[in-house]
Image (tube, rainbow, N blue to C red; front, side, top):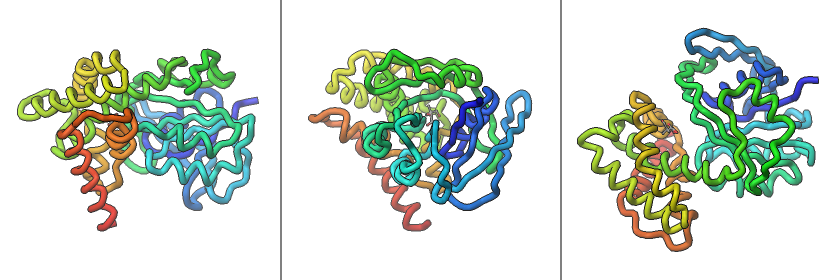
Length: 302
Ligand code: PAF
């Protein structure tokens, strides 16, 4: 019998993973916030065009038990969404969080009872061109793991391996997530406030700011004893800016659309929660406030 997965948060990454899981043989259902069509088509465009048909359920009204749940919502939407579906989980369920930012596992764990919590990070490059159309720009790699450093992959991982390229089970997923959030803390607010592409951060006139921001994030990481992640950060930021040079970061896209950003789960978490005695980080703090200002403006207009 095929494994049953529900996907919560059908944006670019949620949609892409729904398609990948379906092509690996899973029975995938999309969870929607409103009553909509009982089925939905997603189209993935890369060098070829692939079409996928899904069943769709209202996450608030459907009662079907959830065996495997993939959560890909925006960081700020995770808590309310997981609360809404928590009664459908059991001790046999698995919940995979594939969201930006940190601090989400701590929010979700108390909500899901005995269900297994798996955290993930992906570098798959995908954007939505219309409601149902996804443009894949890079297969990327995906890492999954548990906060208790489990070396034993869950039985459903073989299904993920069939459909998801470059998938790795990690015993230290927290370091993977901390690395990603540190890279995002440099790239996302700078590109959002200056409305530039990722590659522009390596060029004049922004390179000096990028450099200073990397140094501040390194200070934070070092004060949390994450020395290896701090040492590797300049090279990691450079590599991501180069490989995504023409891309608009997710935070830039949110600011352009007047949508709420994930700045709190990315920069806010680093400033507030990474270490009990954070060093001074004036540039990062200033960018945090500037993006939050944009968030307030968009919520007061919206
Ligand atoms: O948030 C994003 O857009 C991406 O994580 C990254 C790495 C900044 C590339 O655009």
